[in-house]
Image 1 (spheres, rainbow, N blue to C red):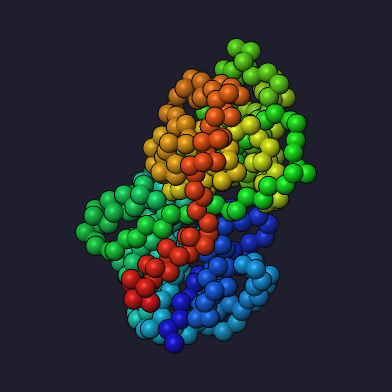
Image 2: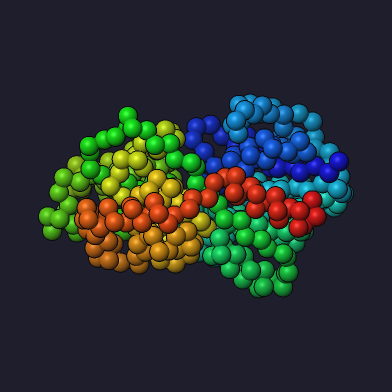
Length: 368
């Protein structure tokens, strides 16, 4: 029987909250293993330079245990699906190439973005070379590519064209977790919410400039701003701006990484959300905000405009004045009530089940 093998290297040793790509890996792998008997999990082991199968326990689409076992035994009938990143260890892609050469399985990689190639200025300096090395090698023996947005698809197809490669590419839009609305979690505090790793690409600098402008003008009274997300690369100077500025230190609260329950509470009780990211492959906080029925101010360009362009306010990610005006608009209760009613009427949230159905359909099309 043909097996579908899913790489979970991104989450095997990860503890705490799954965010970004690791969240996609977890949700998709959990759904597929819950509904199919021919799904196997595996992880890359850097110490032995090998791929090993993983035994797992799962209940109600949630994993409770992972244990590495024997080396993967792949066959030409199998499909091997990589949902996350595999560029941190340069040896991994070469080990994979040799395994594919020997076993002849179908290989699919899910590319969430190629920002280190398309916009390297927004990534860690050491990531750019690692990623480009992986991408240049991986596409040469990949049978099919999944992408999460039209923006990512455009970037990938441009890369393939420049390298004279023709690889089928399928669009698999991502999802948002089902919101858990709890009446007991209603808060009277008025605050704006931004969710995302604290790093330069998320454009916290623009948020700082817009808030600074509003505070100086006396137009941000009795409203707080909460920042929820892990502290990423170059986060120190960003956090310092908010904490050390006398005008903003009592306005902005840097929460750091939080659990899912707290995140849901923050979404449920915020006035609205902001996500002025400079470049995204998808933009989960935008879809999460809308899933909770909350107005979202996000950026023009790349993928953020694809999620629900008629229901979000999209600003120039380099224009602090435009961002400030959008924040003021969001603070207008009449505007906010009208927008939230429209979101409830028109926004159809994609579930992880929807995402998995798209993957299943495309797996059939590629011959699994």
